[in-house]
Length: 466
Image (cartoon, rainbow, N blue to C red; front, side):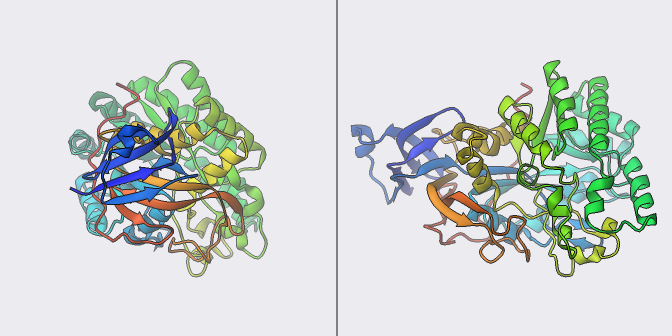
């Protein structure tokens, strides 16, 4: 059984910061000991990693990615192979992706199709949520079986009529089943019926540029849908997790629910914290690069989102990684913003951008690890196997240089997409070495991992509800 010692670093978890050495044995964390003590000095090892002057942090857990997602007549440009490799480069060692139920098909058929896409191709560990696009009696009967097989979270959409949309009755029935079985409903909260009216009216006025995508998907329609989702969950007696919260009005709905001690949770994404409608308005169709849903908001929303992360009204930062190349994919919407594939690349940038938030004073170091590692693990039934550095946990460990600077760029990133949403942005901090279950995947900024190392993770229930 191979043994690795990581010595000299500052170990940061959601709860502690300690100068400690870490012993890895057989893919798990075996022990921690204060650096320089007899206990630490007594450890023998096959490999020793010097983390002096560096942070030793848990591998990131990105609980919202879309590899190979079919959307708008094309597919997300990252495969499970390229996307998980890029994730590793960015210090993320677990993703939770979304399997998709096709209309008229069984949930299990959708899960099996996505398991096949991922099997043997992932550089890091992976799990799945289930997108329900066809709520009916058969689907509702299948939900408890998926909970038992380790896929206990189900995504529903109040947006995208004719594609993923569920009406309030369907949502209520799915929530009722989730409430009975311990499952968790994840909600894309936007009033898609109203948005489609505004899209039609904007196009009729000749408003076809990318910036109009943000203008028709109004913050009030995100807030209205968030409010409605919360009330439906209350009626059903079910917990609720609202994905990619972008608007301060929607966040206010979550905060009000949480003030009532309701089991309501929310995530936001780096794009809403660092980008804005200014990017959507970039000339010469460049704004198409920033089309995603929920859309980017005016900059004044960012302060509310940071505050929500500090007050724990938002618990998780995920990426909603769903990349489409500018050339040939985003360009499908030239002359009609509604045909621009919705999604941004980001799985490689999340840990670095959130460390920059530490540098900028938005959050603490421990909160960085909490929202990027520990909370997503707890939310989706993976803790303490993932999301922390503790005896018995998987040895998913990142040696992070907090002093290095880097410029984010499509020229240097490893995502399979021809642009960066953060092109030219300089950040402080960089991943140096990454271990996944004790195996080195990134070694001193060199990729040494391989497709097929990543294993499927059956998940338990949301650990904030027990």
